[in-house]
Length: 567
Image 1: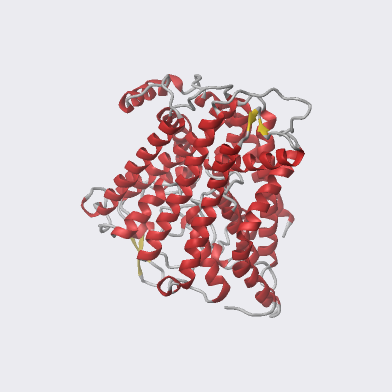
Image 2: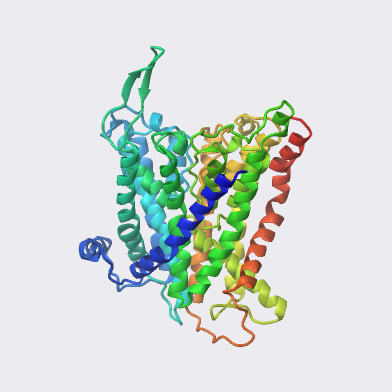
């Protein structure tokens, strides 16, 4: 580890913290229906979209109607994207003549982008046409991110309202998320990326002759526009197979920093939105503080492990950190930071190959996803994910002191606890059951690229990434098979919607409850004690659930590496 590496990490953290309040204030205005500096341009468009949807900003929905609207809209998205993928060969904007995507891969990809996972069992530049990348994948990048933000805001309203029955209007929340937040920022980011050298063109691929006289086809396309939303919306699906390790998708250190900040910006700002809407910004800072503790710990372990490198290399007199699978443009520090950011935020974009990390360096990205990606998390998804852990934490705290658990004046009772536990348990169910079956199924085992514990980690990482709606992968697994395309798709659906439905049910229950005034015995939830309780709850639940599986993969791999064994 170097001082320069840590300074770069601190610069990133400082920029994210500086954005929290202004972006949080703007987003609060958007979701509260207040006028913003963009209203004079976007308000007529907003009203027109409400008319098309057959609703208005004055109409609100019960949680069940909110959930039904969300599910039907996302189902339509899956069907539409599946159709685009299957009909790609006969659709326009296909200068490279891409063929139709096979059925199982189309299913996996459609589910992947609708669930904000962006798992890619394909190479973008060799599989997808320009139309598919834009009308199919990029559109879903916006919509899936907006869906997550809508669910988060609905849950925030449940805590902020004294009593009632409605939690908002899904169509209004989704349209405002897209129109006022995602789209304007992405337009700016697209122009910035173009200025930094990222391609944005409808022109055909370019044939070039190398210095050795060989012929090479250089893939181009509308890259910058997809790059902007893939980062800001924590989607992660790259235009190119190498993702953000590709020089056309991540040209230099400045673009790398912008991408990392984009991944965290909205998720971090949502904690401030929460504080503002409940009338106490300290509550939002406490949640962000818990996220920050887990994030810094993860960065420290990953950076240390990668900077230390492999002791077997030291035995041959080769010093320095682990640079395998990393871009020399970014080095160990920025590759480690990017890996922790992208798995803490359910983004899945990569600027280094996680499968080439040391055992402990690869352990942290795994843990980040297995904890539900609540460390900032995906846009919206990270916030409602950590609220589920808050429900568990305050319930446990209430039992410990013999008081009825409450949070922000809302009593946490059996119904909320059952829904929270259901949502928390669905992730390990999807991750571990599929990983266990794949580990003994010959056709699934045949897809791994490395023997021993690292091969098991490849399988575990794949199902963890799918259920956590992350999308990154250990590079050695060949996932484009019927088994993995179908089971990973099922895992993505479970990890997305079996968390959202219980979260909305909690919102529907809490919004009907009156607020209980704070008293001398009320447990404070805006200070260090609560931060410690929340961090402890997250780690204990994750540790008890996943340690046995992690012990068979990264932990064993680290121990045998120390003993001098390789695979």
